[in-house]
Image 1 (cartoon, rainbow, N blue to C red):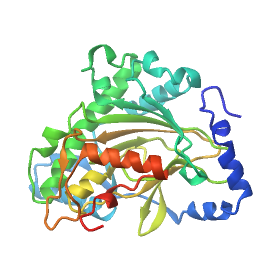
Image 2 (spheres, helix red, strand yellow):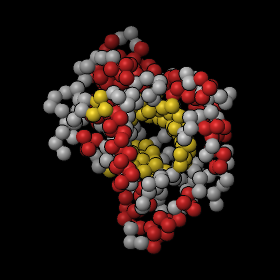
Image 3 (cartoon, rainbow, N blue to C red):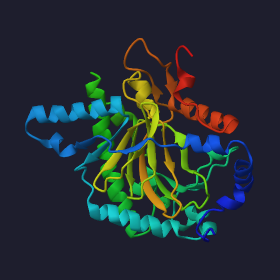
Image 4 (cartoon, rainbow, N blue to C red):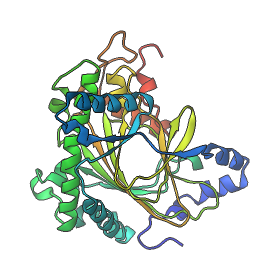
Amino acid sequence: MESISDPPFHEAYKILFDKTRNGNNFEEHKELLAVAEECDLPVIDLSRLEESDEVVREECKSQIARASQEWGFFQVVNHGISTEIFSSLRCEQEKVFKQPFEKKTKEDKFLNFSAGSYRWGTPSATCIKQLSWSEAFHIPLTDILGSTGSNSLRNGRLTWTIEQFATTVSSLAQTLADILAEKMGHKSTFFKENCLPNTCYLRLNRYPPCPIGFGIHGLMPHTDSDFLTILYQDQVGGLQLVKDSKWIAVKPNPDALIINIGDLFQAWSNGVYKSVEHRVMTNPKLERFSMAYFFCPSNDTVIESCREPSFYRKFSFREYRQQVRDDVQKLGSKIGLPRFLTHA
């Protein structure tokens, strides 16, 4: 039974569940969810960037670039966020999401989040593999860092905890972006000029237990429409990514943040850095919490490859987002960068 805090998944998606149980696509669906193995992502110690020895610093930068090319995902430790902040994040997220569902749908008034911050499920789902069994708050960074006046997030401990996280990961994202650009031979102010607090955002995620007898996505397979994503996740697990054409499960690391390359960095780097498909699988008994920071430019920012010949045509972030929205609405899922290849 769903609690009063859970979105009405069973009611909203009953037809899809019944169609999958009774149809011929059940075995196909199970096959899609098969996972080869659990793995540890590359782990990079960011304290090495502060070493006096230039060789050590450069090797750390090379590790970051190498992981971005070979995996599109990596973990960082000694990132500046304490275990106390992580514990507090988990506790405060739980409090927010445990509010009754009806109250959360009006949460922009309750917590002074921007209107429309609360989202759940997949409204566009036409089959079970497009369903996301999750709920989330999408929060502009300016709501958190207090630069929007009366709309600023005001909830004591929650505000303080998220501010600590947001401030640290904002700085970390700029550092990582600069390193990745430098390793492409392009030291520039592009990211500092175009990826600002009013263009980046956080997403608080909750994945309720899913008692359905067959595998359900907590978040359907996708790539991220940004430059970089920085993720904090709890120890429940469920994050999976594609490596060597197979789905692998990411083993949680309590001390690490997970970094992944987004579509914009793949386009900017002309395919050198990889935006990798990933998903979240539900747990039948345990709920899962995570918090993601999305390093995005302004809508008018033009993305063009830093190397020639370019695999991708120039496009603005606004154009990219609109194309993604159009594809999701028409097809039920995102197409992404293949829409912007110079030779489709």
